[in-house]
Image 1: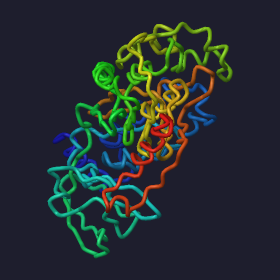
Image 2: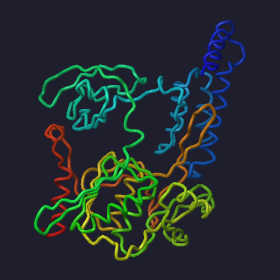
Image 3: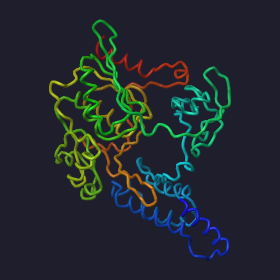
Image 4: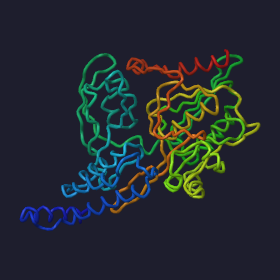
Length: 422
């Protein structure tokens, strides 16, 4: 960090003395970094056709602007603007750890746009926002209020509380919500009547270890007549959710394929079901390493299947609850639960951020995330970045938040009881 500051200072002096002087070390390093970002995408982006975009022309256009970049923030904006030209999820450049203070972080609170207003839906415990009195249900005066600033910086917010009173809060910017909460699974049983027990399973993420947690949960919830699986806010992960799908899917069957550049380039045309039927099914790939190993072994293609769990199968009815923050592997899970497990989806449409990515370390601490595999259903449908709509839509209101009501779960229980005939 110190060397970079010195280089930047010398560059400023040289440029001030002569506009015709050679490029500074900082500018040269950003130019080299830009080329590495462009090349990593060029070689690893899963779609050989780049979704119809001319990636080389895009790179040339943004490369011409690198000379105007003089700091990490500027380079991050430039590179990510270039990546945004492909209009896909899971494609972004992360700044080095040294930028943690200068880079942008939130206010340790989650907000959601409800009826055109930015409403607080969660405040992190131990946060300054909580100490300063920011509460769930507070409405920000402006939906476009900037909520990202350097770590430790202060932001003054004008909010309207659940009581209708307006107030001003000054909160510190703090990092929260990542890494995610552990463990990501929590479950319980509720005896709602003499002969009716319902199960509730909340899943925040599907990471390595999720399959074992699914087994633990289902071992305890197998006596429940019906089950509500809540994946609201689920940020994704890997294919470990397939273990849970296996509990309701019956016989083993292929359900989803991950296809990478080598396979798609060799195929040379849109994917169809007969293409996927030729792939051998992969079972039990419940870790990042196992998922990627299957794709590599299949020369860029892998078809993943559920397992036949025999007497361990869950025989009850299932409802899955989703919202706009259900993303990536979380929304893929919801889709598979409906298609192969007969689950009813309740809530709001998912995020539509469904691809499989890998991280590429670059010099000086930069990290590039690239979607290296697309996602297809076993029937040949392209699931890539497609939102999943619920069967039963439940609107969310600020009034619900203020009353601490959960209309999603209320509707989920209603639907579940209907499926059970109770």
